Length: 110
Image 1 (cartoon, rainbow, N blue to C red):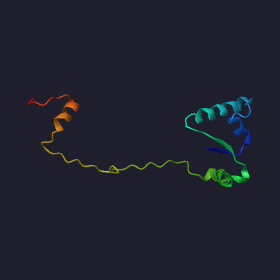
Image 2: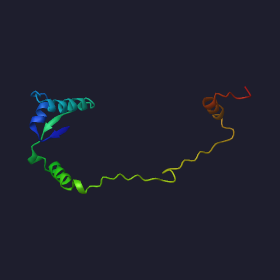
Image 3: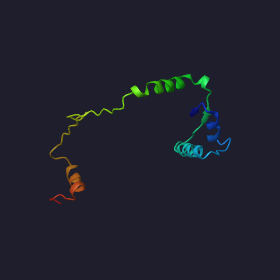
Image 4: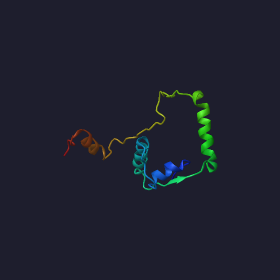
């Protein structure tokens, strides 16, 4: 479900009216292309008066945009975040099969 407060854009995306403006055509084509990536897409108009949470978030973002961090933090670790230990049996019947698959080497006793 895609909700938007611009009725004109929602109507154009739903095919209820045509897109004449060349710039808007590019946006419309992108909307249609992205919608095809989902099994079902519904575009619904939601008036701003009923969309206070999204409007508040949008206002907050634009108000503090310059103060938001533009840095990306990458944590480097000396050890993997998990450890896996494998216990092997010396006479494991799977060992010759694994050796053949990995190196193409047949067992010497056959």
